[in-house]
Image (cartoon, rainbow, N blue to C red; front, side, top):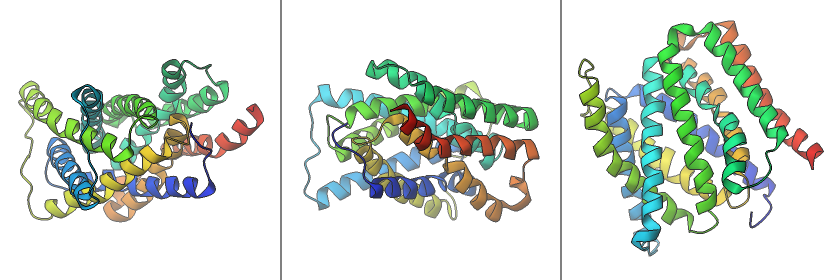
Length: 295
């Protein structure tokens, strides 16, 4: 890390999490399928970042050798989003958000491997606490098994690109990284969409934006993507991928509250679900205290 995080950095991270908590809701509000949501979101995000760079007179050009890894991470990000929104469609916004919280468990194992550092048993413990929370979600919301499994795949993919991005954050400008990753995400969606449609011919995928879809996807692509992802790249210069992902575990809390007010009883879960969610929240609260003791 180049510098120690300041209090305002954690405030900014918290604000970003609130914004991200709204993404699954926007995905559910649209009539277009999750495949369409990802396609238009990445198109708008890449376009928005390019326009911002032009306004700032910032040069985004890098060599092909530098660009290829960034485009590759964008492809991972694209498939993560397909899983994330697909999970919400196959279950509920709440289930999708809670399964996404397992990123901290995956990160506690993957990040030390990539950075070639010792595994932090504090982080593993907190990750296991998240998994325990997921056990309650699995047990009491088994009717949403498909949505949960899709969400877990999405969480693993989110872990992979956040850990890799922590390495990119030390080498490249945040806007350059985010721009090329969004281009990679948009480009790869041209490959993913026909493959997914081919292998699930019995599913009707709506790919055309209708009515308010342009508004929801516009907010999703510009407000909930351009700003948060550029800022997260800045934050990764100061904090670890584990800290970032553990903080993002607060996303379900905000998302579930907002989803309940927007979608009503459809988002009401069993007591077991909320026990699992509380354990995941506990991992976030315990993190700074346990980390201090381990130093």
